[in-house]
Image (cartoon, rainbow over all chains, first blue to last red; front, side):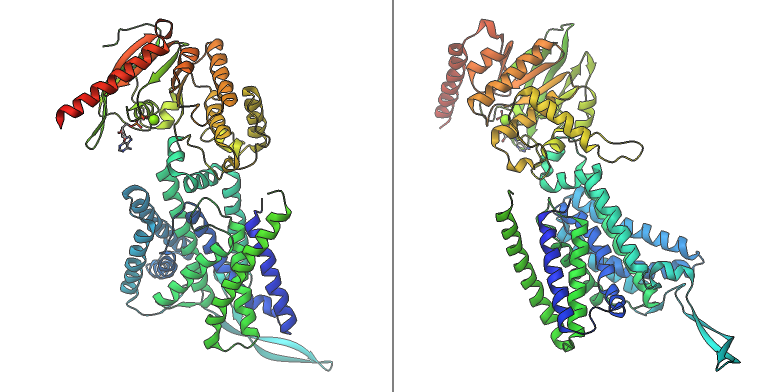
Length: 340
Length: 260
Ligand SMILES: Nc1ncnc2c1ncn2[C@@H]1O[C@H](COP(=O)(O)OP(=O)(O)O)[C@@H](O)[C@H]1O
Ligand SMILES: [Mg+2]
């Protein structure tokens, strides 16, 4: 099932991990594993959705905007009196509507997805600024409450009762991003489900068909518009989900379009690094997960190495180019060795 | 007007189709009898492929009517045409390069498991293998992407796709175009075999008149957006077909010269 492309990015990712293990004392620790999670789990989820759009040969530039929009809508809905889980569901349905609009303009009207989703990027970020009045909000259901209990300690054989503060996170928050492994579990779930859809269902088959030969797929009877719109809807919903998970994890959310657009590029980078072609027809969700892991390890490792914050992006960029070069080389070696 | 025949599986009346300033089809009348192989001829740009695409549900005519088994036939999609028993090999083959041979063979007719609709890949592979072996075309591995195959192999897969269906009307748009002599005769053998079984009726676009006389029961020629000739192959010859085309060419040239 694993194709050549992601096979080689696995090798490259392992090389990077080994490098940081040898060069820092703290890379291979469980504490660092937890630090690493937010650097890759959210991107893995978003990149999974992006893969479905990119296999079509299309792009969705509005996922950062959707990522930003979802938690603010969730906030509004929760404050309007909707219970938390229904508020999440309605917010995600609104994100799907955003995806449907993207898909409609791309597949039915015939605007290029680059332009259609660029328009959506600005419009939706603007809309988010309008409804949030540019003010940050506290994420509903994600507030940490503390309470004080009297706890009996045994000290030197003597029973002592001491007041102790305990932090409470709601079950909702624990599930939707605030639990230490919450985003990781979401990521693994989303990747497993979407890779299954891509490899083992007609949905996936038609996605590849449309991306590889749109006219031919249509001639064979594939409903090209439906396939395209469906994938834009899927992509937007993964972005909305991550937006909410991250808002819950941080317990507040800033109306920050610049940050959101950075997320957009990292998600697309994860998909591309994971072997999804910019030109369509080919890509895997597992690859996107590994691409996200690669970016996460790079980010985390560079910080552990004590790289100055000003240099971080610079090194990150160089490392991506270097890694993709090695990736191409590894592919060539494997192709030469195999009967491919 | 085509005369009404009780054993017509397909009838086309006064079909016209324009693309902006280009009139691809002006007034086409055509019929296909049960079990018959009809050769459709015509110059490049005569509108043959356009007619096929209208019949296959991929494009819609501007005017005119169609009938399948005597019933009005106005397919709104390729799926709808397929439901009426029509399968098509398009001139561009409509193959998906990135998909395997067997996924291409079953595109839009996939076998899936129940109740969860996962692709029944093993079943499709088995049937694809059988279908290709039956044609006799040499495709060693059916799980490779069709991008890796030769032009002739690709064309064979496109033909096998229709032959392997349970359609009773097959539309083959230049099924021999990319083929060598050996592959070409395999396809013609397949057509002959299908004809012998008597289940399907076929419209086939060919350019080689020898093939036409060998494989078809009847020929129709499109010229100037309408059917200019409709004859049983037994009553025509390579010479006659060639003459018609050459005369048409001369006439068109004189007309052109007169205009300038
Ligand atoms: N989708 C289309 N858009 C514009 N013009 C077309 C289209 N399809 C066919 N045509 C034009 O219609 C005419 C007939 O084309 P076609 O049916 O492909 O001819 P043939 O298959 O007989 O060679 C040509 O002039 C062609 O350029
Ligand atoms: Mg043609």
